[in-house]
Length: 279
Image (tube, rainbow, N blue to C red; front, side, top):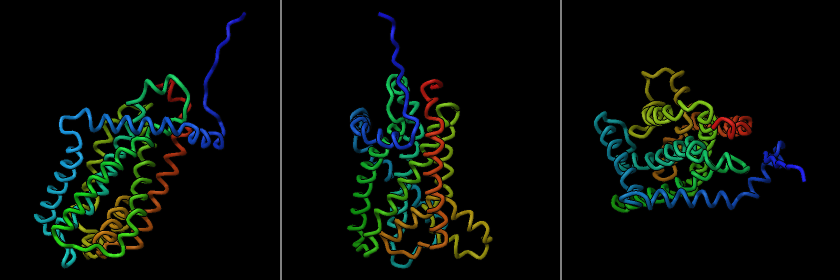
């Protein structure tokens, strides 16, 4: 008998690729569950880390907002205003960082068998959603302490959470693909997260930007291009009923989020075949 060699390679058509995503859904569940166990079982404080991290961010951002006397809506506690922004930011920053580095972290798996590589960065989002739910419980506790009743806008919160997920996944897919070929990008990811923290309305309100007469209109439009502006303003509008939701800026920010998703998928699919060769 002659020697036979089996070559495993991905389907070339988008139609088959999306079917394969569903076909390999059990692998998606397995990777998400594995990451969840690693996150909470292999740390000294376990689940407490998901509580301590947002609390630290919340405390620092609230102090900065108080220090620089950022405007807050009348009747809204500053701590709640910052908490409503810290919640989506923590979710985005963690999801983006984890998905951007996911291919490198699972390099051994990528070289052994074919499966849609998009499963790897997408599965990391599940762990971040669990962290989000824990952080959301902290916000609920703060609202009870301040006796703050949410408005009917709360029903729109899942929409803004979806927008945060789209932003994290789209940008994460793009950086993950770049990370395989250019390993320097793993050092750029923390810088992107840190820079995004400073230019996102966490310690301050978007109304400080939009209503300021000192800030040129072009700067306000550039500010609106930050996709997390729509997410954070949407969370505050949903949870606290503030007037932070500036519709022109919201539509610009949302359009950037959708662009990141489609471009991230496009670039990821374009470079996916070469991952096993260069990783």
